Length: 338
Image (cartoon, rainbow, N blue to C red; front, side, top):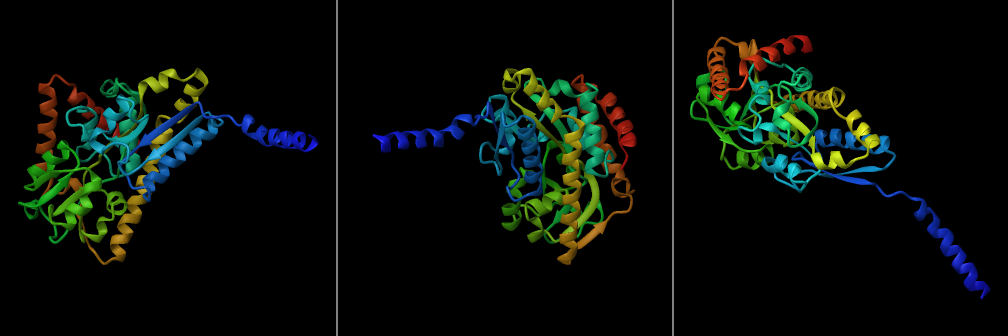
């Protein structure tokens, strides 16, 4: 009997720590398309860890990288429909859904991810584009750095060098830019580009140096033209119902992990990865062509200006305030600096 009593007591003592442990009230499934090995995944993990610590473990974040929970083009709807609780994705993967937001993709608005992210987050904070996100709860918006042109076999110095080349484009806005330059745009999310280059389905990609690093494209593309053709818009957004269900103190913690601070942190990660991606190309002996003046180069500017005007005019026809948003984006580009 004494042995049984001691056994029962020791069992009870062993269970006490478990009884004291507090299970998370919210387990957030965070879906994105970057590889788990990428620097952007690390940046998102830092956000998740900070949120978990600030909530005292009441919120946990579980990551699903590499499109394991939802494909990149369906990510926004996955969050809207609570298949995922949070996603990081590209607005332009949902064509025509974020037309005013995608104004930030137009040439000449940003030379770094820090500058572009400041522009897009400010546009949202000022209420100029936030109506496009009514069906989710936006945490923060950001952009990558300059989108350049990277090809397998051909050097690109002038627009005519792009004639007939199949170039991956991330969004319809970038497609219009490439089309105007004479290329044949091919739409696909970033994770599909490696195999497409490898198999010769495409001749090159439009992408920042970060993407070249994250998706190992330096293994397939050895000619790089730095032009700053565009800056892609990204979002990290949460299911609205999940946010609304949270008690006020947890909402406040989520709010503290939203907005300009975390937009800036993602931008810093992008800019650092751009630097690393370029360094890897240099170390590999690749050809890097840096166009004087970037998108303002006289050989390229007339075509890019025409594509910009076409996009803004198209939004005007849809009764959208494209000129107002573009003008404000240019002002913010100046105040956000380089």
